[in-house]
Amino acid sequence: MNPDAARRRFEAHLRHLGMRVTRQRLMVLELAWSTHGHFTAEQMYGWVRERGSGASRATVYRTLSLLVEGDFLSALERGHGQVLYEHILGHQHHDHMICLDCGLIMEFHNESIERLQEEVAREHAFELSSHSLTLEGHCANCRAARAAR
Amino acid sequence: MNPDAARRRFEAHLRHLGMRVTRQRLMVLELAWSTHGHFTAEQMYGWVRERGSGASRATVYRTLSLLVEGDFLSALERGHGQVLYEHILGHQHHDHMICLDCGLIMEFHNESIERLQEEVAREHAFELSSHSLTLEGHCANCRAARAAR
DNA sequence: ATATCTGCAAACAATTTGCAGACGC
DNA sequence: GCGTCTGCAAATTGTTTGCAGATAT
Image 1 (cartoon, rainbow over the protein chains, first blue to last red):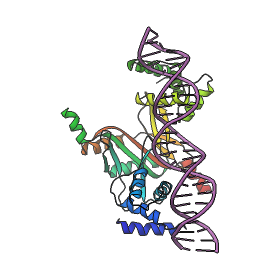
Image 2 (cartoon, each protein chain N blue to C red; image 1 turned 90 degrees about the vertical axis):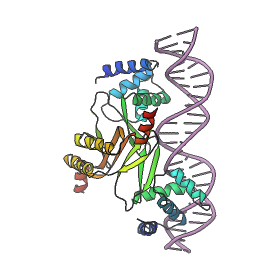
Image 3 (cartoon, protein in one colour; image 1 turned 60 degrees about the horizontal axis):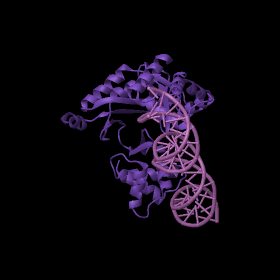
Image 4 (tube, chains in turn yellow, green, orange, purple; image 1 turned 90 degrees about the horizontal axis):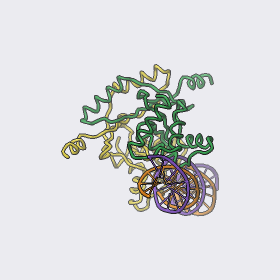
């Protein structure tokens, strides 16, 4: 989904909730759409400050939560209190593979795994609403680098 | 694995690292083995205090990290900074299903999912060292309760 | 004997909150 | 104009750290 469409959707979402469309909220949305990678709350605050008349740290945090609740962003929890955000609207659901050496994040999607998860849920009479799957290990580059040593 | 065996293993582990076997460390290990559920650092600190001559909060945190590094405990990250621990030594690897209403945690193991993960990793020349899979949704009880309303 | 531990309280990092003034509707 | 939002700074939460005295080896 392109930034404009996302913006229109966000405005509609806010109105639907009886919330105001503010410069600060739109700025955070726009910045979230201007990267295709993952970012932290603090990084977003940094981008906002670079823009000059930005938004406060509190507003950045409040807006990020708002965007996650509205399914505009997804939050990927990485232990030690680190949370990575990424925009998802219009993107296919995917899981992550994270390199423990260089931090590289690769995305993947596997339909068989998805189906098996649903099956497991069904077996336990569990109503599945979301899931998170993260593979941790070492990427091809780092493996090669280590082998070279 | 029974508590005594875990304790012997822990003592050997400590010696191997040139670390001391202390009353506090053994207490945390023993308490971790005295529950079969998941617990937080703060809960562990509570149990330790109930024992009277316990251990300080700092020591509890230090020991929990030590136990995770030594693969005596596993840490399950639940957003919002919450970390749940459980003892794993001698237990089969498993994933979790968490009820968003009542907090119930169910464990499951699915060999096909495990294998597919390995396959995905292989396709990306990724060396898999661990993974975490959590399903979120609503358990049978809570679904029934909601339907009744 | 000596190096590692522990307990304490202070430091920390990430995030949240209360409140007065600003601003979207 | 009314009610929501923002910015600020202070509060909170969960965890880590420095250091002096205690303890395991």
